[in-house]
Amino acid sequence: MDISIQELTKIYPNGHKALKDINLEIGNGMFGLLGANGAGKSTLMRILVSLMHPTSGKVLVNGMDLKKHRRKVRSYTGYLPQDFSAFPKLRAWEFLDYSARLAGVKDKRKRRDEIDEMLEEVGLYEARERFANNLSGGMKRRLGIAQALIGDPKIIIVDEPTTGLDPDERIRFRNLLTKISSRDVIIVLSTHIVGDISSTCHHMALLRNGRLVYDGSPEDLIDMARGKVWKISASHEQFDEVSVHFNVISSIPSVGGWELEVVTDSPDGYNAAPMDPNLEHAYVYYMEHHESLLEHGNKIKTFV
Image 1 (cartoon, rainbow, N blue to C red):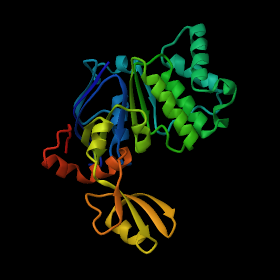
Image 2: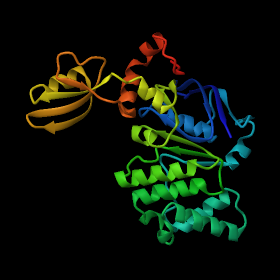
Image 3: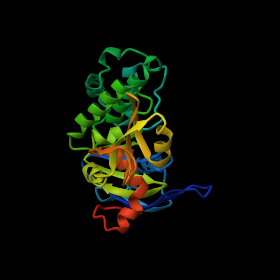
Image 4: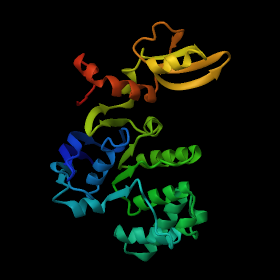
């Protein structure tokens, strides 16, 4: 299974160019799409699930043009939108039963077995009789991924799945997606939360203002930030000064001041020690320097 996105552009009626000439190849496994709010991620997700048509360009799924084979592609695509909401007057199992029928599971016994299996997998079996509007936020998101998985889809698209979840629910959700990604499926995870990508994806892309600015592995992106991340020991008086001069990733109070993690080429003039970068550091550094990195012959596949 593969998705090929070719010269994809989306311009809204008001003239806003949400996507600009996107070229991207997505294969089996977990693929992460990272970018700030408004970068164009949700627009791309809606095009991939054929809820929106591009202005130009095309999407091929296993060689099939999505525009020409919309019904067939949708039949094996599961989708969890950012603003997912279940029918409040349906119990959890009833909502999944409805979703299974929409996914083409016509046999009642098969539907029931698949629903029970799915509720067990997402940790909602004990809540199967509860009405959807009585579920917690995390449980609703798990119900959402369950409906996206009904019918054994080969492509699963999830848009900002962990927004609003507490840390425990976020970890549970990421673990569930990681487990599912071991199957012969494509999972496209769109998020602005760097931690969702770093712990789950081997292939990722960055969107910025509708443009694709990075396409590669998290590890290669992290490598570009080596030697650019520092821990600065700052006094209380220096805190504001450091915050003005550098991108401060984290700040921890210490005896007599602060321990600050900053991303910069050089922390000249401060008491600083180098740090190994993580994906959050790399994301901040790259989004600020990707044009200059490309100009200096960076070998990572990038687009500007």
